[in-house]
Amino acid sequence: MSTQKRILLAKMGLDCHDTGIITVAQQLRENGFEVIYLGLHNTAEQVVKAAIEEDVDAIGVSFLSGQHMAQTRLLAEAIKENEIDLPIICGGVIPDDDAAELRNLGISEVIKPGTLTEDILILVNRALKV
Image (cartoon, rainbow, N blue to C red):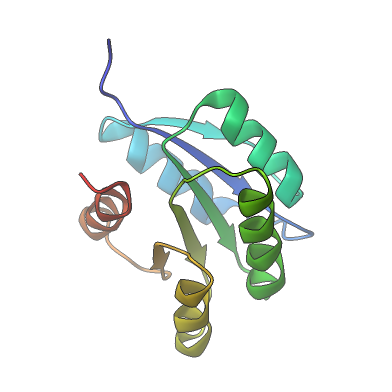
């Protein structure tokens, strides 16, 4: 039985800037994670359904469009409605005040642009409690 952690990554809403999340997906793969990338334009319900079907250990979402508060709130609600307990990691261009509010919504970690791979791995592992 593998101990490899599985992470679902997705872009939500109308955000179509995916260079960052694709780069993070590759970094995670190179460091022993199994990554399922859903691509662009997902709804909260699609992300949660895929997380359940793929039996992942965490969900990661990324935003550049400014939709991070609304979309992450919808994701947190969908997770609660489906009674699943998964850490959510949110990345992208997120102001410090919003990062604090995202944590209040239950987001485990917020990753800002320019974060080094080694620091991303620390944050992801912390969210996974490993």
